Structure formats: C-alpha cells, structure tokens
Length: 419
Image (cartoon, rainbow, N blue to C red; front, side, top):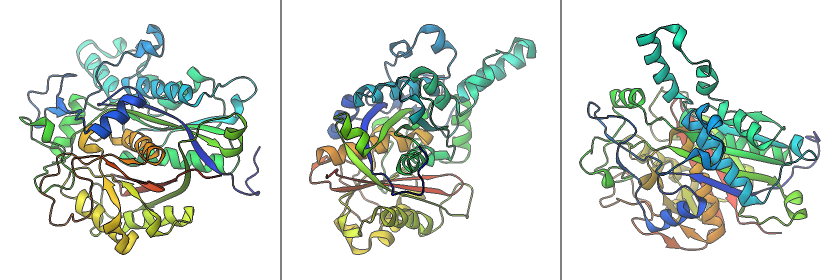
C-alpha cells in the first residue's frame, strides 16, 4: 500500500500511553499535569552525593513485569522497558489489536537521545574490574538506541516500518513527525510512535553538570525546574516514555475508534550554529514553527496553545520566546503557552513523547496544563505561560515544540478532530 502519489491521508491520534515522573498511566499523568503535581526529588537510582546536581524527575513505582515477563525485563535496559510499557498502554487505550491480517501495516518509530546508558556504565565497570570475558552477551542489544523500537515490535507483533530517531531532545517529536508522514503517505495504516529515555545515571549527570546545563538547587527540588522564571539555573533531568498511536482516519472510523486529535503539521529545521546553544533570536526554532503551521494550513491566529520546549535554562527560554513571537507575530501574546517540564523535568529524547501526549490531551479536553514555579518572569519572557494553575479554555489548535543539542528544531501541530 505505497500510494505516495495519491492524495494524502488524514491522520488521527487514537491511543496514548505514558510512563512519567508524575504518573505511570495516561490518567495519572494528565491528572498530575492539571493539578500542577511536581515529580522532582532527590535521586534514588544512584548515589549522587558527589555530583553537582543531585535531583531528578524519577519514574516511581514502575514494575516492568506488569508489561513483560521477568526474563524479558532482565534483558532490557530501563529506557526500552519504558518504551515497551508505554506502547502497550497506548495500544490498549486505542483498542487496537495487532494480528496476522494487519501486522504488516502497523509500524513503529520510537526516538531516544541516549539509549541504554545504564547498561553501558554497568558493563564498563564489569570490564574494568573483572575483565572482558565477563561482559554480558546482552550488553550490545541492551545498549543500542534502536532497541526500544525493535523490542516493541517483538512484544506487539508490529511488522511495518520500524525506525529510531536519535536527535537529542528532539528525538521523540521527530519520531512522531516521521510516523505521521508514513501514515499520511499510505505506507502504514497505523504507527506506534514517541520517545523514551532513562538517563538518570552517574555518568550522564557528570557530563551534563560539566557543561553547566543542570540546576544545582539540590536543597529545594520542588522549585528547581522553573521555566521562564528569572531565578532558573538550569534544567532538571527526568525519565520515562510517551507513546501515541497514529492512525489513518478512515481506518480509525471503520473500527469505531475514539479520536483525541488530528495531527496536521510537522516542521523541522537545524540552526547550523553550535553544538549545545540555540542560535540567538531563535531563527531556526521560528522556522520549524512556521513550517509546521504551513504544513497544516494553520494561520497564527488559530493557535490556541503551545506546549513549549521550556527547559528552564538561561539559553532556551528567552530564545524560544523570541521564536514564538517571530512565528506568531502579535498573536503570540494571545496564545496560552506552558512548559510541562516544570513538573516532569526534562526527559531528553523522551520529552517530545510525553509532551505530545499532553498536547493531544489538551486538544481533547479543552484544558491547558500550567507552568509551575513561575513566580518572577524573566525580562525576556513576557508571554502568557499559564503560571502555576491549569486553565480551562477552548483548544482548537495546539503546537508542541522540541529542540535538541546539535541545533535540531521540531514542531508538531494538532487540531481538534472535525469530520
């Protein structure tokens, strides 16, 4: 069914799954966002006493054996466990059953920024202390970044297009955008897509602290992630996964699926400027927003809500604000904008996944999550960031922004489904 020369298909979101620092189900995650629940606290996954940053948004109470048997769980890094679990949640939420008749028309794109860092660090210790012959034969398949996508296929039976995007903190959004294109052009009837990450590890924190990207507000973790606030001092890492089921509209309607939103636009650009810093003024990010709106046929004044990248870093927040102003013009001041990273922390390659889930839920429920910990907006951050309290409002069109090291910029556009 490769009808790329025919009319483009409409693509809708029919299932959602979430493993996050504020809840391990879609309902708990969404309720937590609207309540302004904070998932950040002292690190428990390793001894962080020697690290400059000792706080994170850890996933709590996750048992992989709720989604797979013990043997399979032991052969997966934590990032892959999260991806498989959230994918199974999303399929169940969609009421979508993969069988011999449709397996070749169901694909997977799951992004990650780093992949199996935990097992890599553990096996390096084995190598140094016990020698190369004692390293696990599962080290490589547990470590490589594509394994969340590959293992999800094994656990669900999806035999269609399968890929992994690795574009740093834009990976989850790139995965959703690429999956959107595959369904839109008829290469699949449905796609399992999103992002996953589990990088709360000693080496990861050492590296991010060394490049001065992380918050050092160790004595006050509940207020450490504060996007757009003048007192922000860096991002707080989170972990987890967010997965969407994207489905060709007619296929979804034929089986009576519920529809959260229609995905209508995808824009991606590159700053071509610096390894870690965004280009001043946000020119690349602005173009990604504009391309997504053009792809969707959306005018700036139609945008109701933007789920911002909003990392709580000195560089991102004013740059993203400038980009939104460039892309939306005067309507930027009338648009609700929030950073859910204020509650979950920054999931790196998983962030685009859980934030797209939040954006689809905002469209479906006409509700906007808040930016918590926003007490004193930065001088360069003067838009409506929905401070501290969620808001009930009509959300007809929503955008989700993700930007990553290397200058990657991605914007996804969602619209309320209308027949």
